[in-house]
Length: 180
Picture (cartoon, helix red, strand yellow):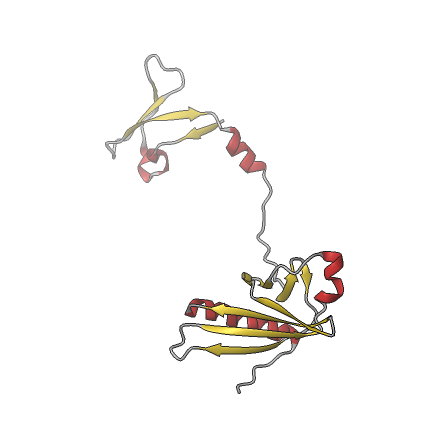
């Protein structure tokens, strides 16, 4: 059983208190008087709630942050193994831009029949997912030969987010930026 104590118990003047008196008609209360303070209080007893009891017996949890390897996917859950050629364009005022990804012989064609259809272009990293539906396939002699995906950035914030993804993706895949 926990006890709520008044401020007089923790203050220095509580050490000089007079002897506690029982209140008339109360069996569980005590009135405290102090010769150096005008404070008079009553000690209260309250039952400990079940939540507090559970908190005392609960385990300590730690936050674990897992870093996600930056990947590109055309089918959710299936990472693209082919490294693309990426071209960036940006408006003169810097407010918008476009990234064009060209994949020659992408691995998605190897497994698209087994796993599912190409549903879009997904760039996934530890911040989340950037996506586009502007995806087109190139066919040569009736066979798939490549994929071109476009990602449009309409705000400087979109541009910055894309560049953070590309920096992570480039570091993992050994790419480097070449200005043309």
